[in-house]
Length: 453
Image (cartoon, rainbow, N blue to C red; front, side):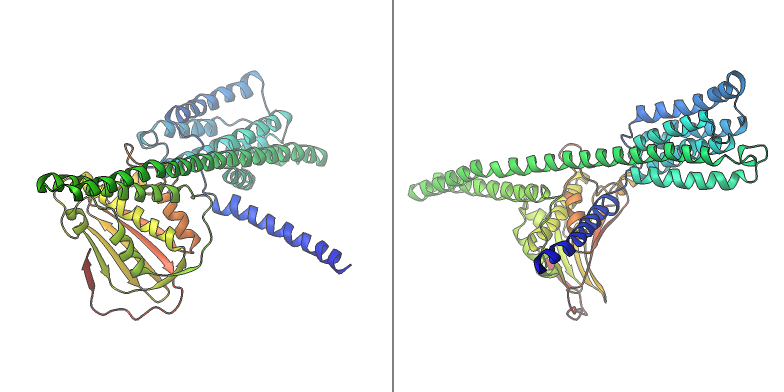
């Protein structure tokens, strides 16, 4: 009996835990997407619909099929707002954060606000009830379901409040209770269906991302076999070199074997990075106590630099050490990704590498520690700063896949920390990883400990 009662009492707890996990994953952790599929053509079509649609429907609802309330000035304002979709700022990069803010504002004004205004001003009649239903589904189709829900609710409140000061509207003739109930059911049904469609679309995008990452991990894993074969060839070449008495040929074979070993080591390093990136959506939980200075120095010692000059350009500055909780292997990959990006940025600017072109600084504060990677490379365009940590977004379209920094953000977030970037085009970039301390931090060294790796 006790077991039965225990199982029954645990069911609500399991249900609550599952609901809490779902809410955290779907509502809190999932990044907001202001505009779905923000292509230039799509935005131009939406803009054209707004510019032409408002005057057209004013003519329909006031001249051809007259409705109780119409407002030509409001229609012209909303039509003019639609012209923002044709501005250079929006069309230059429709996926940027600044474009997203403009598009979200224009959509909010033209869809929920405008439609709520006309619906309430017309007393909730059948024409505007149907229009509200269509608007609701359209709004959920073009933006994130959370933004759409908030937008519809906020637009209803704002429209109702403003209409209190506008004479000759449907608000002066209260809607019958039966009509209010009927309209609430219809609009509520559209909202619920919009949320369901938005959730299912978000889940589909997440499944596609997961499938892509898994495929990348499998491909990286399968490349281990030919690399192992190359390693055996390198060993055989080195053995042949040891049996040749002629010094010149032996030296050439020894050099060839050394180059093969370097190639395998570099490829294995890249495979480790890609396989770590493939765990982007399913990072293992780990509470290792990691010492920042040891983490950085170990990873730099193992990093596959392409030349001695490249190795010498990376400097570690230890202003203070600290310890934090996390996964040692995953944070090692974070350091690798940041250093790799810094070296790539440095190479893109051209010129000879010099010590200090890439600086890794370790600092300790009262409540957190910081690891900062700074380079003097090409920098990051301002429009890309807010998207740099998104999966599959890359400023390097030739060789970048857009997963490295997304992986870094997931690892740092999982440890309770934060990662940020500051940059100016042509002036390099600085990536900062801030982490909560695992325990009392060793006393900060007064003098800078500077080591060239």
